[in-house]
Image 1 (cartoon, rainbow, N blue to C red):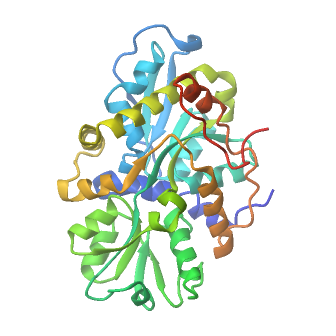
Image 2: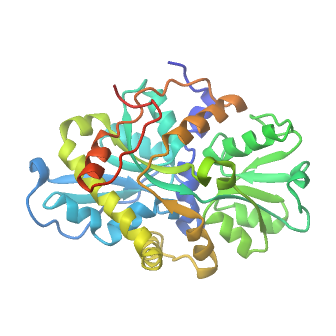
Image 3: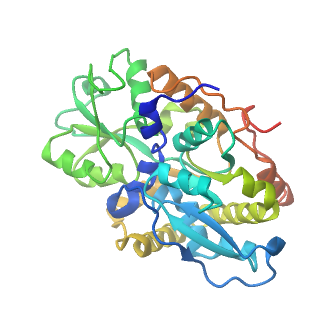
Length: 369
């Protein structure tokens, strides 16, 4: 199995995870430490397999709304019965992967790049992707006084959340398809790719240090509230306008030892996504209430309203798009060709869906045999 280059070990892993979460925190804080564990409302009923607690990690970010809402509304806890849900929040992909590997969490919500990086670095032994959570929510937003068309991006300074992260890879791939040249390491070339933490990007935009940004929500909508304009929604570049932004992962050891608990959590995520899609207004308010609890600050309407409508919440892991994203990283020169065989185990999810009378989802040939 090929290894990810050293630079990407530091950046790809932090990957989507960073922006994903970072984004919504106070607007998006980064960090390497988990927030203190929080325990859901008291568990009621019989413990599943005699297990006292299941530990779940996620980011305080809108793209992790399945976790935010499932936790806030007690939907996941209800499926766990007497097994207590304990949660920890993270500001960066590497710290969540480290926590999973150390057994500090059992299940996590995370972006595609850190999941790929964690799987490759462990030589396929650390985790499995077991379900989907969210799609979309990434946009190219620009200063309308400097950039009016896509071709105007050439020669400008555009921010991405981090070197080698999911949005950075997507932007480099878009640049390549435009026929422009950019060095993937330095970010210099026909476009200046400026790697900037999401929490800093709004200030960088207001000061004129960058002319735009390829970023996830709610950073994109925050920039729009500061006068930027959406030039491109990344979803328009994908088949059916869908691409993975958040997945559900589990440590392989926990999946082996507690398959019934894993299924219970997945029943919770499936029912949460169903509730979100049936009650978008209530779900948005629920997610924002959880964000306020976790970060000390709710998102204002002018930010959360457009951000929310740009995302889709789905149980489908959109496996083919994760495979394509890895291919984009390879083409950009950030990643050596990875062996992703076995990164998915969708059997627990599809069992849950079958019980609900719903169709199963495919793993793009990357599932366990």
